[in-house]
Image 1 (tube, rainbow, N blue to C red):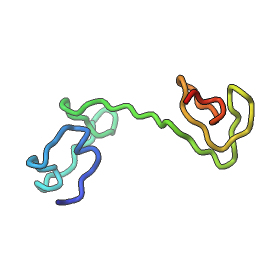
Image 2 (image 1 turned 90 degrees about the vertical axis):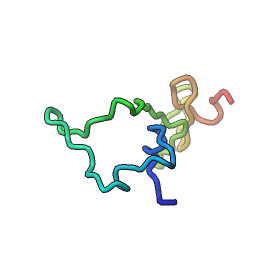
Image 3 (image 1 turned 135 degrees about the vertical axis):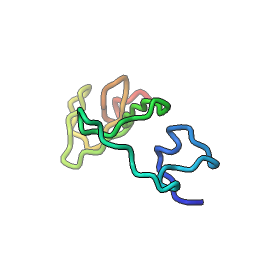
Length: 86
């Protein structure tokens, strides 16, 4: 099985469907107005949000005020492990 991009799975393609690279097609042309690649109407709009962050220089927890390197998403806010509602 050839290596596949995560985008292949987000679009709902199956193993039987060939990707553009496998068919030898060029990538989608850039949009003339924005210069960005155009998105197929069949591709879902996938929003990603990290549930964990690591900041090597430290960051302040918005709930307790402690300086921490690791924070977790809790109710749309990144907080330290002690403040996270597990």
